Image (cartoon, rainbow, N blue to C red; front, top):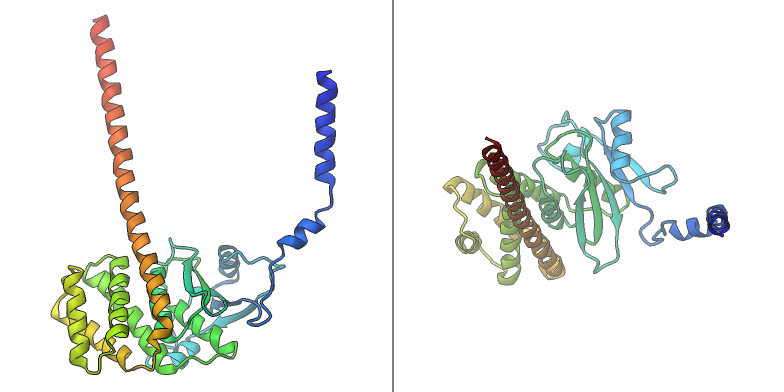
Length: 307
């Protein structure tokens, strides 16, 4: 009887495996947003063919995926950001999927081990300054890089899709990214703390609508004090100059207020998770230390017993 039941189960399993997968496959096909078109992928010009394949794997792009593909070069860099080096090496790549208004901007670094200086929230902050909203952005690199060139790739994606971003805003956004990474490196501030600082200053500028550089300076000083961040006079001036430029841009802060709020929440969640991970790591370390001590005591007791 058991043998008969076993054969029956195997038979039913084989029938299930033999069922045509077409209906399931059709349900899993990605729907194309006819309003925005297919996602755009921009590869760094320095990538070799093998590195490009690695980036495609990182971004989850298969041969059957419908995407538009472009390459970002040093020429694009000087086109979008004045004063940059046209001979710059471009490894960072990005995939941009446009979304409906109100869905917000979110950035995902899919190869975090290879993007060494720029965080997801730094990208998001700079992109909001540049005028990028309501999009899902994925960043990847097959080798360790700072991550700055991905910003240019994103600019190009919007350019080729027909949406022109303001040149001045793009340049200020690039400066913002440079200031953010500079503060994290030189001032020794945690990257997420830097992003939180930039976001909070932006939110305050949106709320107060400062008319002068002196008013911007006051906002910067208040945020540094409330967040207990110590900066050198030179770094403070970097922030003041940056946000005075942002103040003078034609940014509809009411329009990006919710996205700034969402960004603040994301940053705080990231900081909380990092702290929790550190606590967990300490607990694991304490556990194994105690375990090893217990084993040592056990062997000592055994040795004494037989001596």
